[in-house]
Image (cartoon, rainbow, N blue to C red; front, side):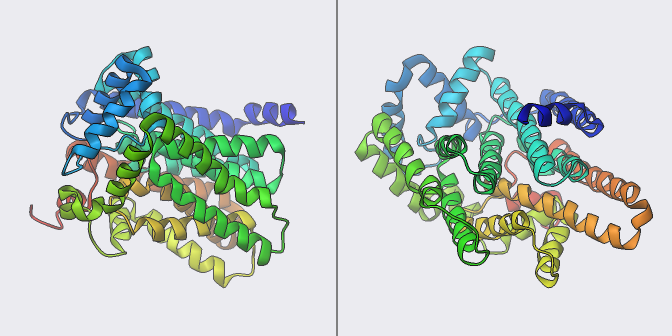
Length: 404
């Protein structure tokens, strides 16, 4: 059964169009890499140093990274809890060379795999037309394109968050021991990629409670354990074995207090709860407006689709929870996952009612139009203006909202 579905999936013309999209995305980013100015003294430089140091010293080198991090007074550079990404970068750099460009290619690779994962699961739980439109919008996200060419971890984290998002739905939609084990492993790896991914756990728990008590669906104890206890046990054991109890606790304490102690976070990472809305409006205004419109229209309509409810819960709670930490739009790039899905679903709904006879053509033109606008924004912000870190100050300055 599974082989037949995969065979049909690969032979479909929309899959061919997706492969063309994948090639276009690769080409656009690869061509732009020659113009990237990597920043040695910023996060990029430290990720390259981490990968190089652990590549030379092995696992024992992590203790030194923890010592250096906990001794630094400003805590300006990335913390060593990101063991998963550091190890992945070690393997990648050993295979393709120790350079900024090597790490940038890891981001590009992660971005392309992210598109494949998104297209596959959207095809599985919606339809091929929706999946292709969704993939197009994801492929031309200014934020995703901008970070897919940097020696940073965000594109890789986005890939693991997307896998967690879809595997969680797959797990409660059709349970099996294998799916449960795979989800626990992937979620654990995602947290080891970046510690803030642990915030997905309360999101999953809230939805499971809704699923059980509001939708009256079957939810098992194992479901709750899989999204909370088991991944944290695995991650905790890795932290303790690599960094030790003292250094791990010190690092966690520093992370929790960094919004008030990190000079860069104080200067550029503060702001009101709606800061992320402004940032995304500067990056992809039409996607933001469509996403907000979809959420309101969903609750005003009578239709109910469990996966759409999960995506709304994911978006709203992610937005809420990440407001308690340093605010930087690249830290919430995961919001692209539900927002661009909402955009496609809203446009399909509007078009099917207004021009049903030409729905496919009109939807195609609108999606391509949005993709073009997004690419123009990417070109202006990340290529012409050369933005490295898309903080609000940089975005507002590039859009000429502020003079300096």
